[in-house]
Amino acid sequence: MKKKPIEASCISCGKHNLTKNEVGINKKLMGENIETYYCLDCLADYLEVSVDDINAKIEEFKEEGCALFE
Ligand SMILES: [Zn+2]
View 1 (tube, rainbow, N blue to C red):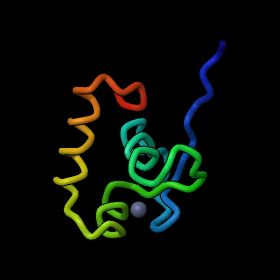
View 2 (view 1 turned 30 degrees about the vertical axis):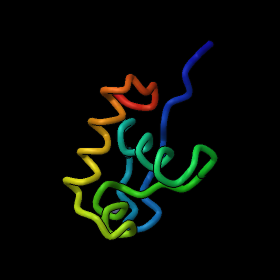
View 3 (view 1 turned 135 degrees about the vertical axis):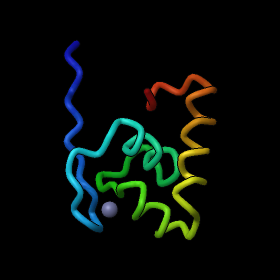
View 4 (view 1 turned 180 degrees about the horizontal axis):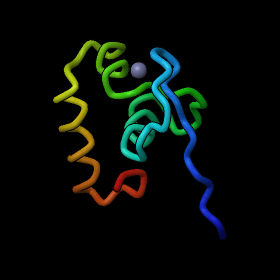
């Protein structure tokens, strides 16, 4: 089965080509079925946390071996 390329862009600032990790953390924090994504900056803003907090979360999920992250 071919993998679909991820072509997500930030709904807030329009940043293109969000990374797999950016898309993954959106799904983790906002729900698996979301169709709109935020870049890390806008996600942090939206959740009222720092980008460092988001990156720490990504690392946590990666350590758990979550397939949404690389
Ligand atoms: Zn953005």
